[in-house]
Image 1: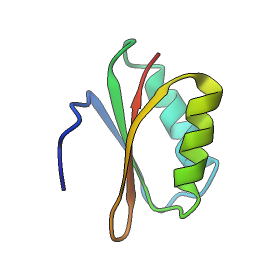
Image 2: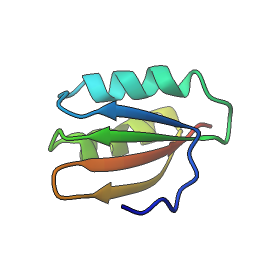
Image 3: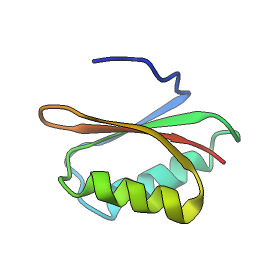
Length: 79
């Protein structure tokens, strides 16, 4: 797994379905500073679209999404 994004906090939302991964991410984003990156691991098949919508809605930049075998990793930069 690549670590090309330097993140300050990781949230493992594996096994959770929407809206829980988004809620966990939102809560975690509130604890980091502007410009810092949050890494979120999800297994919900809808998470890719959910995080794209969340990013657009909240203006927190979705830096990258890595679709792996059993999970997806999302990198969100706090606005």
